[in-house]
Figure (cartoon, rainbow, N blue to C red):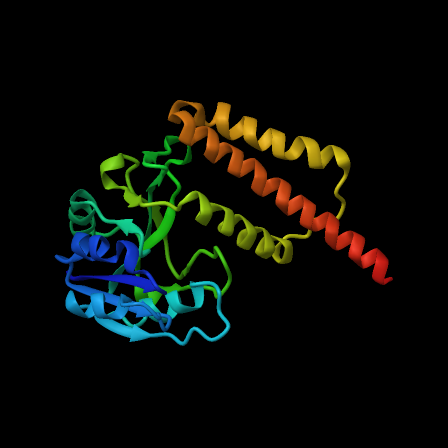
Length: 252
């Protein structure tokens, strides 16, 4: 049975050639572009991808395009890959063997996250629901949403040879993502009260948990920086909640 690879893009030229090289032997590559202004589309066309366009409009998230993308594929089974993720030959082989006798309608695929040139083992397996029967899947149009599957869901083996390899982000990119993600968390979560103790100890606990108990200390300086970013993200979120509360009182 054939498999379609689906990739959603917006100005994604940085890793795109490597990503496409890694999936070129699948039966179909569908690249869903959100009106890139760089040469993303030209690169995709040079690899023979099926290119479809999802109007970017005011969207600053990829999820609405993902639902459109998976249903633009020609084949029943689709593997959703980000434009900075690499598929290993072992993962490809496993998926083709799996669909000969599938036991589920979708699978969680695990991911190896790179940061500052190192694989951050503390974040593994970072499971993502990325392999599915397209007719059974609906991707909600909200940030960090998980596709809804009309059927059963399973998991890939946790052996790292079957994992997607995520190229990761730069320090600058990490800072930008923290700001974006905390803005979205401010809308999604129902956090009310922010005490001084929470401002102090909640980020501190997140650092300790990630760095010590989840093992980021084994990843050297990159692990320390990653743990510090994790704590900082918690602090920024709580600070924004406190700011919102203050502004609401002033406006009352």
